[in-house]
Image (cartoon, rainbow, N blue to C red):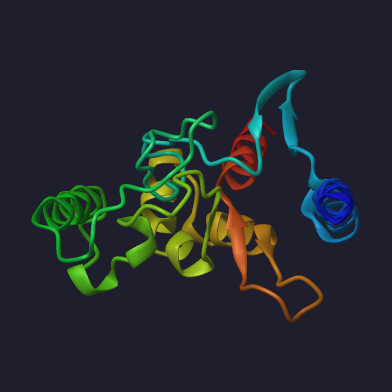
Length: 189
């Protein structure tokens, strides 16, 4: 019985130590390497909060760049994917409908020009970023809707491209909210 109590105390001590230690290590990593020190990147425009740059939002107007679709309707309180397999008939029908919708808004494109990320939801359903390629295929639509030249819109897109962390980790990306706010700022001048 003496050995049992000793083992029990050691087990409890290690459970507490390791669980707290794990959380502490994650917190330190978020502070050192996480974007915005692990906190929400709140975006304020014209004195009002318009969103969080690290949580995707729905943009549907022609004058805005569109982000990735969301399986959770961009609900930050409950992120997640659809969990449908790529061979699921419902999933394939959703993808086809998204492609058709995207092509209707971009008649100058063909099916093979539609980036897969624009018609497939991310695992979290909250992805705030798109690739530069996904932005460039939307330049003509956005420029026409805003009455701007394609070159002007393309320049704004290029200014918003974020490079991989330390030039090694990740890929080039563009935050959709910040890109759309940069366009609004350009037009308000």
